Length: 270
Ligand SMILES: [Zn+2]
Image (cartoon, rainbow, N blue to C red; front, top):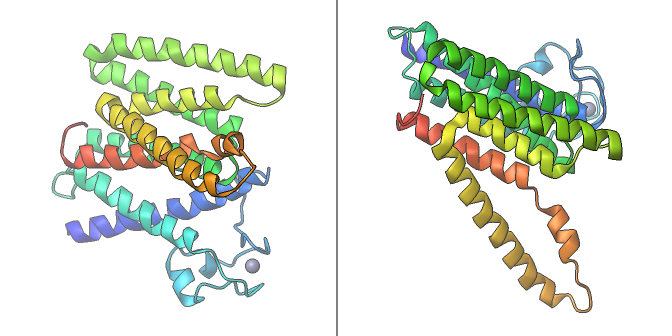
């Protein structure tokens, strides 16, 4: 019975992964996020119902779009499989089974899924174009606020901590609005800090500390490797260009998901 339950969870996760891939593509292209139909990322032609089935449609079409015959990037199917597995691991970590069905665990699973949605799409956008969508940031802030309100009702001990989170969130939001009005685009640093705060609210201190340390080590390694490779290119100092290439939110997102899931499975949190 539990196997069927986990298969259902995996399918939901794979569908979400498919949605994330398309959302990243749509936001990056400046299109509407929610649309009635899905399309091929290459030719942007409408997909049929069968072509929308995650993973299976990729296998049956042998990784090619039926309309333009172009190869579909493997990252799409990888994201579907990865999200499916992530959701199964979260359900497993929460000890959520048919025999152990608990409404509070279902609520936790929904909140974690919403958070994971925010972090995957944000990381994907950062990896693609180092861009951030105001809509997406608003989504992150709204789910954080709803989660804080929920926590205040469930666990009264964390109320004060959540009020601090709330104040910090308001300050960052105001800074973002001022910056967007001044420069017509949001600041990467403010987006980064807001994402870090959302991370802290959902994944708590330990996962965040691991994430920050891991991100700093990754950036140091990245700079070190590129500095070494830059020495080979004579006369050009592209360090500034390299610093702009470092995708901090992307690195942070990946590390946070892995540390968070590991901690849930180890039953340290949630
Ligand atoms: Zn196509």
